[in-house]
Image (cartoon, rainbow, N blue to C red):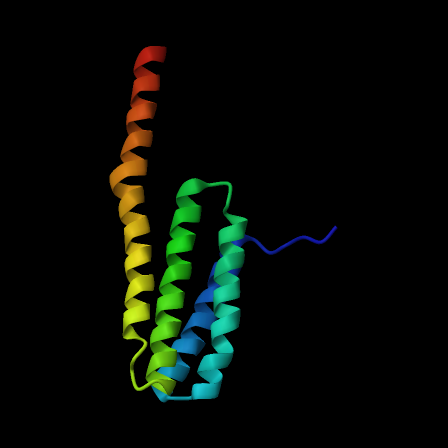
Length: 123
């Protein structure tokens, strides 16, 4: 049976991929930057898949995917489209922020109330 690396190992690898992508962007290495988009996004998706059983972790992982999509769109816009990718990037950023807002303002408070009510009725 093949044993997959733990989520922490994958998160650390993901950070390295992301840093290489962003360094390529900063240094204006277009080909390297483009080459790093796919593995960075795929690793983020794999991490989301690994934590799919935990709703809190999954929501944060999806927000990271949206952040990378925004970041990559921004980079590609800067490289090839005279900085015209900002609108699409903004949409990805705002989607990730909205997802986290729904989690922290709606889902988490509901779960905390439900747990508090369960504790009170079981006491």
